[in-house]
Image: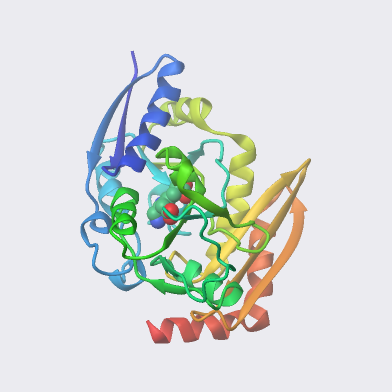
Length: 309
Ligand SMILES: NCc1[nH]cc(CCC(=O)O)c1CC(=O)O
């Protein structure tokens, strides 16, 4: 019987996602073996990801395992993946996407972003979430907050802030739906590329028959189309999670609608556009939106962000 060996980060969310993938493979009669490891992104918790300053902080160690043949696949949150993978690696499957919006989570069930209290303090270390909050909710204050979901919720409980902004996908997978006090609409508070989606990475040296088998068990075609459009957008901006870029694609028949844009760090400038394109060429749709944003001040804004960090 064929065994698929799977690399993953150790966090509870990463393990939940990896076990979901393992169950799907097993449902098709395959055996699985999971080897969890800690990545640099998990170990360094006192700095924002943007400040750790290297690409692939959550993925490098998993890629070493793939390259060495220790694992067949690595399971990731698609949003943690760089827009351009290191040479020799590829994303071979995406599982069906969970809802991709951000939520506000708090132990104060009556907390409102636009409520009577003049200032509430929101914990997040995401440059995108900070910029969007500054832009749409200027009265809200933010404090840096890193660590896995459980760590952040403990800090919230200890009173480090009034609320956290998190991906709905992670919140629901970890069973914290009861703490959600606000759902941010994707049309306005646009999620980052890939949010809510599990991506499966492999080395290009993985034998073709195994690759095909894994894809047949795991890949969700519609999710793959929207992910290709979103990731092409991010690639055109040459971006990762250290820039306040965002994009969300949805499928309508054989048309993909892609909403995406960019903000500066303090949210005083924000550009967001929507374009549609054929499912025949999701990359073209993503890159044409990217060029549109770059040519409308995006290039200057990106240069200023890089100079500041
Ligand atoms: N940055 C960490 C991370 N990577 C993926 C998720 C959530 C799950 C997903 O987006 O698929 C989270 C937590 C969060 O941002 O709230």
